Image (tube, rainbow over all chains, first blue to last red; front, side, top):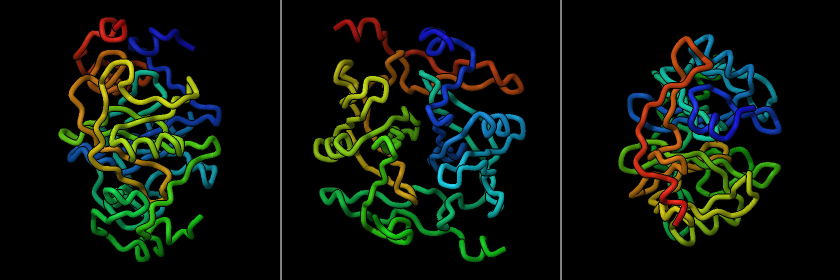
Length: 137
Length: 137
């Protein structure tokens, strides 16, 4: 544990994992700035990511480590890791060469709330691959 | 609760709050694409955000609603809200006119891990305001 000043103003990486042992991570396309997904890492996933140079997350639903692209091949090559002021969130700046969302889109954020109709979504992207083909492999 | 297909492929907004009643939110500068901060909303914070057009979060450390900028004046005008495939994360595309981080930087992500030294951070931004002056007001 560091002091508030160490954490916020220091040059030491002191990642803060929550009560479930997780830290929140946004993966951002290093070329375009598009946010591709938001996921979580435990300590082991973070270590694997820094050691291999490819993003590994911890799946909350499956409760296991998940190397991004292990099934689809749609990996994320990590170019830079940023940390926020209180060191409880990370950004991975990643290079990708295919759609990152398991539904078939480049980004998981392919829908936006319609204005003044806050229960309705509009699609703002087109699918870039066919997940049925990709995940059947 | 919707089916997996409703949630992933549908046009209905069915935000999924976690066991603590929270959903993860990344605020992204709508002009530059820079990720400014990652925070959390409960249902009430989300409703206040959609109703007022300005970002309100739920502070996990203080366990209370927190209208971004209530102290500093550094508000976030929400231009668009994106939701991800499983509807458990949001992106707010925001317009901002001042530094967003309480430490004094434009973004909370002002440090990056040094390559091959995974315990050391380098500063990648300069402060854009003096928080001691701003928060003394």
